[in-house]
Image 1 (cartoon, rainbow, N blue to C red):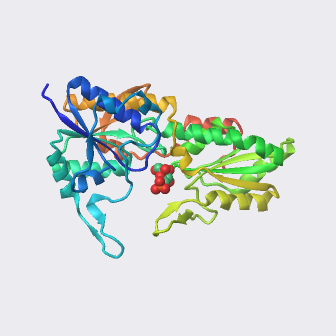
Image 2 (spheres, protein in one colour):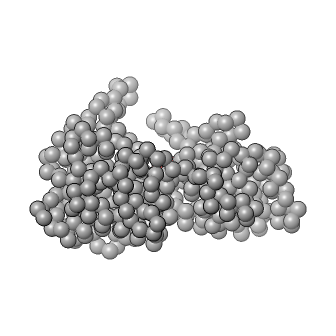
Image 3 (cartoon, protein in one colour):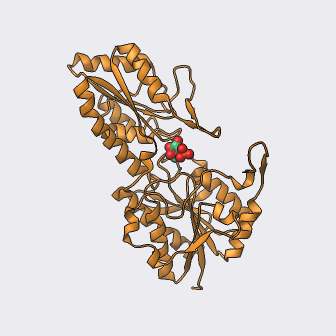
Length: 360
Ligand code: F6P
């Protein structure tokens, strides 16, 4: 097989397990005798001049990378190259040609993009425009990418949220409080559902299931009637208000990010039940390290398979996890099938069977 040079980049929000993918890619590429160039900060490293990248050989990726959160390459979830912001009030510019020129300048025979559906849509467009051989590796704590049962980072986020419930339960019981835990996940309630079941939540509210506040209050009253003085409520960040509004927090610079539904519900629950409530917004802790064993394992399997796909000249594909093994699927299909919580799924049934209130 002829020697190749492959580029690897991480794009979109970081999560735990990204470095396991990078490490595995470098090892597998070494097996084929290929060079790996790590592009800095997603597509930004290909946009800037001089190009920002570093050669990744085996000495750059020891076993400790498995334990390391974040991404050694850096990432960005801003700066779509097709509508690149030029600064306040200055509009946007299509800078895709500069990225494609960057790929050519580095002599990349293929690019492995580790991203979520937003990043994949951009990378695919670049690949089509610039005839770049692209392979995708799914990562996101939200676990909303289609055609894969799990994405890198999801399992760690669930473990962190579960641990938060473990820590909230004793203090809830000691003070006879209702603890509301707001978790991430964007429009998909996977983190809330998985962590809520694993952490023994009494109420789990998901963006996929509209809630009735009366039902939530009833559940808390029922727990009281059973002699329980406290309750755990998990709410996903994109759950709407009673009026159907998605709550956002405005950050300096004008960016608006999901947030606030935990406090909103805590106040309503306090009004409806007379319970004392407290709120924990878990935030970016869910994206931190150490990566769980599963994220290290899946990330490693994904990295190896991504390089094997390049060896087989199979491009425009995404590695995926299905039925206990790594496979690959058309990248376009994965992007097209956004995966929210299936409200008829076994896990939703499990939650209901345990008497967990889903708000409906
Ligand atoms: O998509 C991953 C995610 O962590 C979401 O769950 C969350 O809403 C968002 O990113 C936070 O984005 P940022 O890191 O830009 O605050």
